[in-house]
Image 1 (cartoon, rainbow, N blue to C red):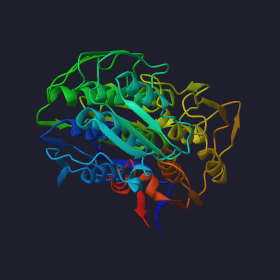
Image 2 (spheres, one colour; image 1 turned 30 degrees about the vertical axis):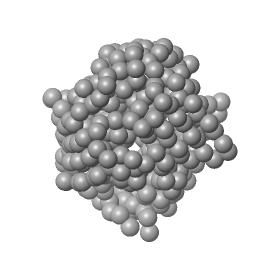
Image 3 (cartoon, rainbow, N blue to C red; image 1 turned 180 degrees about the vertical axis):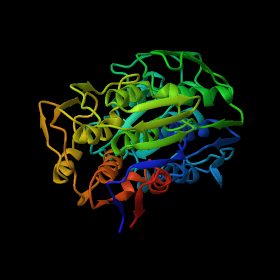
Length: 416
């Protein structure tokens, strides 16, 4: 049925381990093309987006082997510069392969990557950065073809600090001749993880995690082993589940240093969050309180990927809340489904006005994208009776096994 069924109204008790980060894994997998040898990626999440990237790597000649949560990639014999349409259009992150393939092969051809219902995510900044490095990029109505006999380091300034364009520029610059100075770079932890992986393979990169990254091109990279950090969005989802449902839960392998804004927000809701090393305990005894105003923002601000989960929390919290989405203009799509469950939410002038104190009731709701789908699961946990979240395939793009994880935390939830 491609759905998730939740019998709501239960407090949560238990513990679970957080999977590896989706947003770190995908660009790292793309970067393995640059290594004419073996990359061993541990704590790798087995989610559908990773499976799509694995198929793309296989299509160009990489040898792939899974061992539990360890992924072994041998890119010694990469030979094909064209990427299959069926997987490119399925996942936006396929655009990450452009910089890596230009760096390794000097050529790539692909369809425009899959679209996104949460808002406009143009690839013009990706192409601008690669052109600055010396690539000749030709675009038709459906395809992109890029070539470069040799990429050359240069100064690249992004007009906005795009995560994807930052990553593609890094991938193109690692083997380029000379020095690339990337200004107004995005500072997300996933970019730091990508740089750490490349450094472990012999890349020369300085400034990861800041707005200016300097890459000195090297002649060649070598085989390496790297452990993916925990997924800060999955961890935030389960943190909010604990705040919403009450009880006491424990989350292990938390990327605490990446979650400051999410943890602060949970505490503003009056969730009791305690941290010891990479272990987080969440407890809620009384009623949670709404937040008068919170805005999403680029890292280290409150993540747009956590906005839908926050909307669920605010819907059941006491008092009024206002959420302002500043990253993706169409990320309020979940509001309609939450109102069907009994929430009182009005979208006006780019803000979500939430009355709070809602008594959510179970019903059939439809997920339209990854993070909104996971938030509907949280709404089902808070609702009375049974909630069926349709289109679970969206959720499986980023959550390895959300039903298993939440069952370990005491939820009554199953795939259908």
